[in-house]
Image 1 (cartoon, helix red, strand yellow):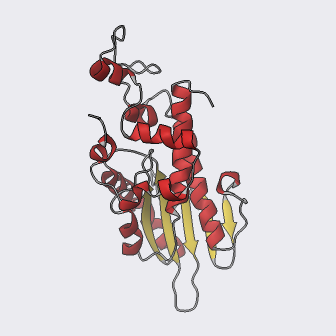
Image 2 (cartoon, one colour):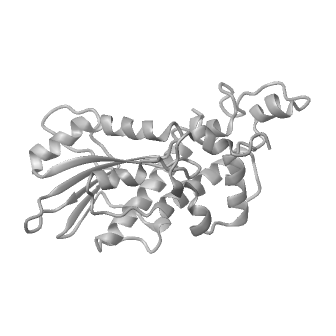
Image 3 (cartoon, one colour):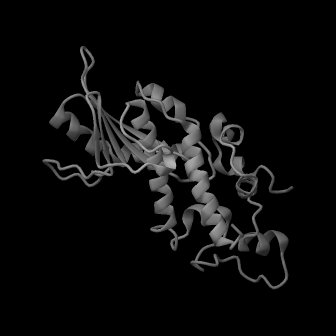
Length: 257
């Protein structure tokens, strides 16, 4: 009970929709139970055994994979260098693909029947919109960050000018609002280039979702402030990130399927 509610205290500030997936996604009971246990930091990690349970024979708090850092829940789902270029990267792509599928549905573009079956193409386009996926932009000047996850170009229509939205996804659990600011700053040099080359107004929109389903307090306000006429299905993004995090935890602790 001492660790109950640790999740929300650890993240400091979360949106009220951070637990919406519990009511709407309808995951299998074992998946839901493991994620809730992880949120409360109550999984049998080496850190928990060493410092809280003080189990005899457990003499180290180090991660059983990297053996460099304390094995906390947050380290397993977000911070282990042994997982960074593998399962973390796959989780990031799964969340980005789910968002791409959502956009394709909104603009009547081809997509998979379900988000987990969707395979984004590098360029998807119709008369209303062009969507670039994981596309390295060719620019006239050197810009270090020039490969956003999604570049959404809403074409000019009547009196409405062209709108360019640079979208980058981050399934991370640092202070979520700080991660949003980091993403915005990262792509500011890139933002000016499409405006200059293609015309219209460009905006940088970070999509930050915690690995255990948390959303930053500013999640909804980001879209209102940027006056984006697009909808983000929060539950789909939460489902995508939670299912992959469940798989990471399942493999790490060698839990039955």
